[in-house]
Length: 320
Image (tube, rainbow, N blue to C red; front, side, top):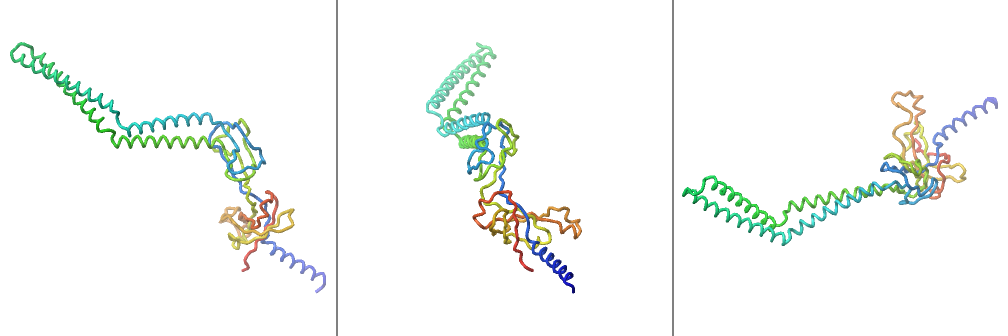
């Protein structure tokens, strides 16, 4: 074999070896968890305490929307709750002694009116028997006596109701009405509080899509945050090695501009390929399938690495 032929064969073997060794080295970028904050109401933005790129802590107010209408609704709900609670207190305390005495006086008056009406009825009926008064006049008095008797029964029933106090069913209904008013107030207060959009995590403001004075629709993203946690590498695993990659597969990460290498492991890999429809692909097409994966750093020093920087991830796959 001539030296020239030997050199060509050696080069071909080297290329094949490099291709096999590079199969598990995947290019990607450093990313951080993104948090999108949405508007809970269709109200004007009245304040933006932070600018894009600012560092914020969990609980910091990032966007403030107009709360005038919401505050009015909360005031109405608070008044309704006070009214419902006052009704519960009133029913718990029961009727006042003065109310009971007034009801007793109305009963006594109704009894006296009934007695007068009965005496006059009996007198007229006696006169009718002696043909001294017409029957129609006596009939009118009979009706008046019956009405007086009914008024007496009504007054006696009202007095008994006051003396027996509040029924348990009435108190239960009043308490339920108060609970409903309280829940309504809490819901409106929560909605009003959400007009101050707060950061749920420590991070950096990546974007503020709306400006001061604009009115975002409900559900629109008003702020995008990048969490201050350590970044992760987002890569695409080719189909030929997908079966060898699992959650926890170790990896070595080489970040552009950083001399040292970092250790990490796979924390997520998609179950669906990004090249579809997978069921109709030929063998050659399937080799171009890829699966999105995320690789996290084991080193604490990686926390300060910037987002968006290119990274090469070498997966330490198990040998067959």
